[in-house]
Image 1 (cartoon, protein in one colour):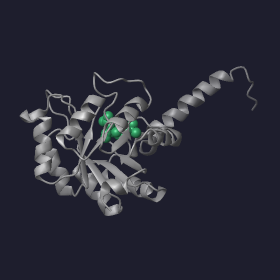
Image 2 (image 1 turned 90 degrees about the vertical axis):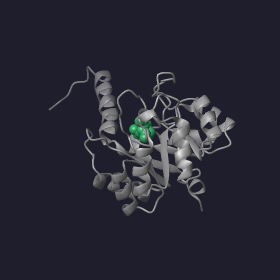
Image 3 (image 1 turned 120 degrees about the vertical axis):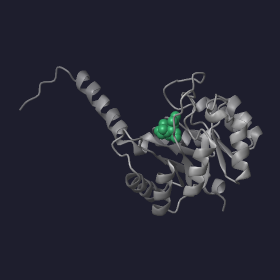
Image 4 (image 1 turned 120 degrees about the horizontal axis):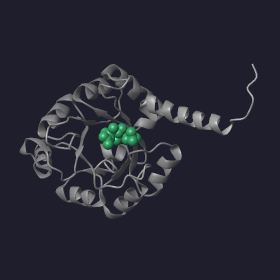
Length: 236
Ligand SMILES: CC(=O)N[C@H](C=O)[C@@H](O)[C@H](O)[C@H](O)COP(=O)(O)O
């Protein structure tokens, strides 16, 4: 079965921790991926060649690789150039995800040249987009699937706070390619809703693999709760 058939209607878990996060490190991300596999995930999304390697050793799920790297003079940071593509291909990523916006890219590369390079290397391509127009353009350029990853993270896409149900619904209707729902999906109900809107599968990151953010949500709710119950006497 090919990768896209394998992940159909399933949950992909994004296992990422940047250097400033408490769970940073490939060993930790491999444990996270194992937990995701045990829980029924159909695939993993991971950052850096090193993490992709460690995760591939730990699980038998397909791994979608990205490299987050910042370059001066460009806002594009998800697999911005062919250097990051090479790093991921060498690590054995089963598919490579990349920023498919038309924003200025580093090293004189363009969206079109990056896609042509990946095609020449026979790499499965996942286009991370922020709008419907970008999704349609990526399909035209010949990528293998599209993800709503960047909605709310470009200056011109809506930042409603929650998941972008509207973009998923419109893109799933408009595209012939599989559309992945990704970004700020926090509950099983939201994931189900994405699938019912036509998403091919759903990518969940922070709600599963960033415990500091999960704790923050509970802590905020607790603070709110204690403010509401203000006036109740606490007996020792
Ligand atoms: C915008 C950006 O850089 N997104 C990144 C892409 O790989 C990750 O930081 C996200 O965790 C991932 O997209 C999953 O989304 P969420 O963590 O919201 O479930």
